[in-house]
Image (spheres, rainbow, N blue to C red):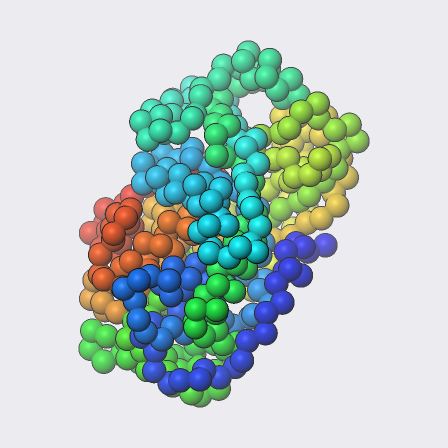
Length: 411
């Protein structure tokens, strides 16, 4: 079975733009193209044509449609915590933010993330992250194995050293509804979406001046944004640039337990390399990846059924014995747009080709970062600076300077 999200998204886009010159062109119209186009179109200081080029308007195979749609503040870097805090506020105030009285009221299913450590090294990492999180205002609490067992008696805890849990603004949210609202809202504000593919970019010195579409048409542009997810490196290469982002395959399973747990399951991040959370009233969602974990083709969505049998299910049953008897109901594969340099986003202009902008490399935590990053990118495209949250630590120049912004809490 495939993820059920794409059936919710059935837009129809023309293939040909109505104009041949745009102030901003987005290559990629899934989450990142839609988010930034929405914030840009509503920015009071922006006045210009916007084009979003999306290769597959069904969105059936994009990372956005195959996400697990979660949000957390348990990061190791303050900037990522601040980004998620903005996202949480945005989600809870979504109806006003999207400026649509018919938009739904959204919330966050606050079951929280439960990070587990089985070694003292792992426990020390949780303590270090906890200090950063608490200083930034997150509600994270450290839990001994005994405290975990009292609060969540379904876990096996005899091999645990420490846990870290935050029940405030962490859990599941309806990311697909937000994405759909951004896309629709951007179009209402005049943003053009076309069903086409950018196959070439033309540069004149330090600027990209045009994009060629698959039908041979050439679009003149003022600024261009690479929002192509797992295909980020190929898009950058069209402009003669590089970015250390590659597709990494990630697998998801939705299952039902013969004996449901006596309470909601936090999104549990186990040192065995798996994560699992509550999904429905009596269903659960697990995720993991193969080892070794390396690059794959951006269109490779084939399931690895031996992975479930040999590693994922045994690890689930070890941590939660009730999951020894379960039945898989859905499964799918998707991709992280994985930044091999430091597992953090690459955002903003290239230092030598100033009108080529990156919106790439979110390494699995992109959905929850979309509100803040989309807003910040719109600010930069409008005025060349950030007006709210400073996103300059994510700029490309850190790669050239070999100055990683390392995020240790990557799932």
